[in-house]
Length: 144
Image 1 (cartoon, rainbow, N blue to C red):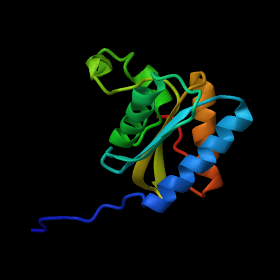
Image 2 (image 1 turned 180 degrees about the vertical axis):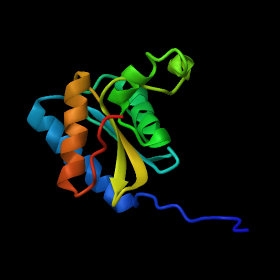
Image 3 (image 1 turned 120 degrees about the vertical axis):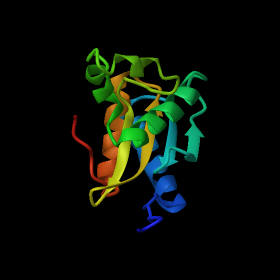
């Protein structure tokens, strides 16, 4: 019986590069944002807030990254998931965010973290995250 396993996780260097790239994407879109990157277990790895991003974006960005890392699903997919009465109670989980802007960070099919962006509308946040992921060669998860 094997008693442990190794799990891949995003490096600090890659997380910082992802934040920088996402800030550039957000700037191109025209939004002021807060960006959080978590490791594969949803623990905060890198965090940055632009000077003009609203204070509410702090917790939202962190929770979007956590939500994306928790199941390896983009946060925008949760809107449809929690419509199902069988799992609707998940919508009441304190950290679960069911709007766009959170994406799992996937490398070669393996979940290594999550990114959460908050500051624009849900679609703008999602677009900034996906642009950054693609720019750095990460896989972009498709909707469930």
